[in-house]
Image (cartoon, rainbow, N blue to C red; front, side, top):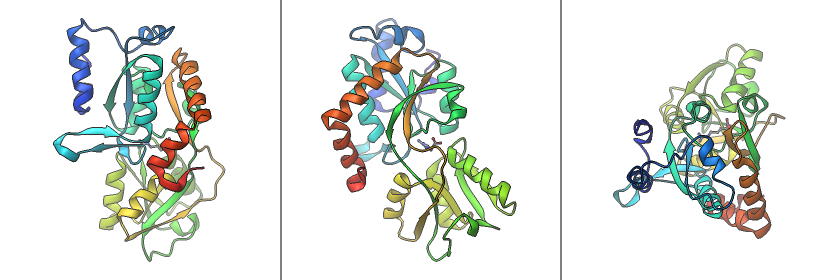
Length: 271
Ligand code: ARG
């Protein structure tokens, strides 16, 4: 029951699953038990934590009066859970809280377009990378920004706890007149940009494209940089799920299902 607060903003489907779990006497989904159950068909519930502010990876779809978390990551997670014989439960929290949630045993894995950085690898384990991305600067059309050099004297929005925040910090170290504005949700960043409270933002190309398509008053330019990129699934350290997940990811690659999902969610951005 102590997990209930944590699930407050999950989908109707996930809530139904929780009800079911509770009714069965609460087979413990998170922590070591869940992973250990993975021998044959898992038969338990896997809890995925995400930050559903990141279309098309994960976002809340409100069509039809119900709220549901959908997206590329969700489709992948559903497929993997099904292949491994688990029910899937999804919890929605701020990006900055995802790794702490894994460490506290409140989730079995995280899918959130998360990049496997060396720093994060000290605290969590990662699957193989399943999709690549690059960094872009997003800004109101006509701002004349062509490279990070043009961010001098500007306020730059980044998501709290993201690699974009890190990159922003590095840029601000080199150019101290850059003021960083760390925000919790990508939608807030886009709103702040549109209202002119910030001048630019650093966002992944795969996500920026969607926001640009819906906001013709915004533009983006790619940042040429060598940093870590791409998305992987994160697990608590030493989780036994990592190998099982990697195996299904590899099958999805070879069967063409991954490509199908990339086309479904990113259109022709398939690589
Ligand atoms: N790839 C970036 C990172 O790992 C940003 C991911 C943000 N994801 C999200 N669901 N908001 O730091």
